[in-house]
Amino acid sequence: MPIHLLWGDDAAARDRAIEALIGQVVDPSWSSLNLSRLDGADAGQALQALEEARTPPFATGERLVLLQCSPFCNGCPSELADRFEAALELIPDTSHLVLVNPAKPDGRLRTTKTLQKRIKTGLAQEQSFPLPAAWDGNGQRQLVQRTAEALGLQVDPDSIDALVEAIGTDSARLESELRKLSLHGTTISAARVQELVGGRSTNALAVGDALLEGNPGEAIARWDALIEAGEPALRIVATLTGQIRGWLWVSLLEQQGERDVAVIAKAAGIGNPKRIYVMRKQLQGRPAKRFLSLLGRLLEVEARLKRGAQPGDAFRDGLLS
Image 1 (spheres, one colour):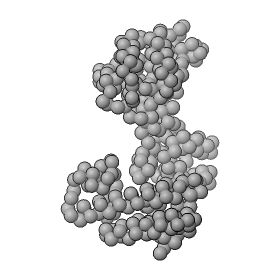
Image 2 (cartoon, one colour):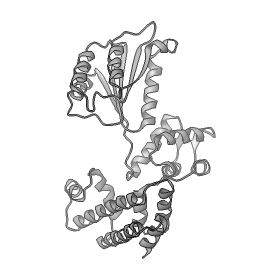
Image 3 (cartoon, one colour):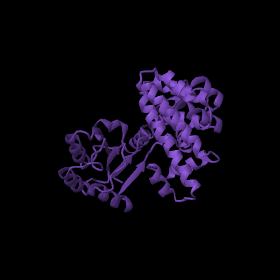
Image 4 (tube, helix red, strand yellow):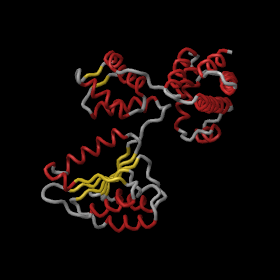
């Protein structure tokens, strides 16, 4: 299978898949001749990848041409697309062209459509490595589980939750921390995570979740962590305002009996309708006036910030006013 399309923003998982493929097809004794690592951000290197992929391997093993930041499925110029489509038929079975890109392939491009046809007929392979969204707790737990399994480690539910709390969706750090934890055995406990993995992952959405749960102390702690990490205070407020406004819309539409998640998502300005299912569970039993109150407090925080108050003071005073 000479063409491999790998995409998604989980760089750690992508890299593991790439290295596994290299180990499978390239003879280490001849890797200096049969393994090429190129950068598709440079049009010249993208064309070089097409030329090298058409060349049979030297000596034993197979040839692999790795093209990071591949342009062929995202914003591909017409001339480059012509060269790409012409080269596909000329790649020998003993050569592998690996196209890597963090972004999802643009299905409108003719190059993407050409690749998809080959994937359907078994002439190419596609693998996706998307990171879960910041609001997707189950997705983050699955990320930890998959990464641990890939490293041959066992994690119990408590240790998974501890890793999500400490690391979030930083897949590169997750792999690094799991490798560190593996030095103490293949079974990872929550106590070991808390002992060896420092810090706490957070984002503006987590601040909002703490406010939703009626836990101002946790919200303040997460706000302070974001400020210490260099996040602009007004940007945090903007994210929180959008999050709580979305809750308000979902709550109001639910009260009116609307059940179509696509309609709710469009009205609330939420790009992914799947998020509505998560929000429904979060908002169950909470009145809409609670969200109106939170929006009013955030407006006070924003006003204090614009009058020159320190971020910590503005958040505490606005939140508790």
